[in-house]
Image (tube, rainbow, N blue to C red; front, side, top):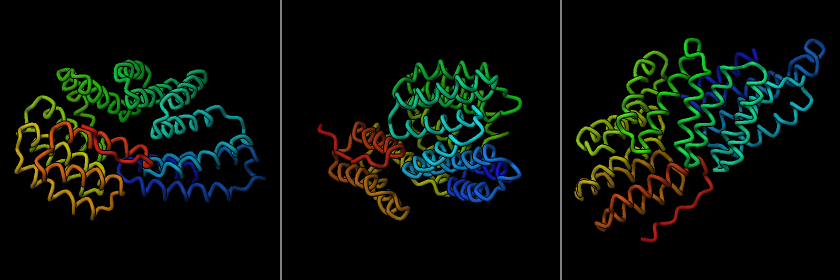
Length: 333
């Protein structure tokens, strides 16, 4: 039952991080009640640590980075009294790596993920090592090393069992598209996005399918196909709002603002700004996110909003998702 709940928590991460936290908390409570006489201290502690690792990851996806760190610390202490299973230690290491990435401690993040990948490879867990290489790619990309991230994804593609776990194949193709787009290789980005298409339909959660459409809209924007990008991004923004992902909706709205700014559509920028403020306030975004949006709205009202200003705020919101302690400072120029 503990393992089933922990697995269910992991499956819920994509569409409902809140639900994932609830499932993991239940797994923790049940693991703490397991009879030691029946299973032995080592195995019980493995179960207890595993449940807390799942809770840590669910909290991380819910932007509760402090809660994630606390759950990982508890799991690490418990695992010291576990059975010594290296796979449990590797699982903890992967979540720790993703947490450090979210805290923008990229060197520590990469080291944690690489240690976990080495352990998995040593234990003959080829597929799980491939999954770790996907996580490594994410760390490298968010640390500003998109080219190295692409190489990590190529390595992952040689390890994963796409038949048994098509979601990992989807992650590889989606991220290859995203990373190539950020490097300016738009044809390659479109190629990998097309390869991911069937997988979105088969295994993608609702949020995955929306992100597919978002990536397509972003590609259209980068190619200056503004009319198509605007139509697509409006659909994506509304879809994110429907599934209660306000930060993602905020980012898409800023990409819509970028569409207008690139074309000098001041009147449309003002209209978009007036729509954004009450919407984001009602959705309860944190103070720093609202300050960034208020700055942009003021610039728009003063007809001083440029594509640079929109990109500046968009980049801040992306980083704020990973580190809630950031403070917004307006650009100097």
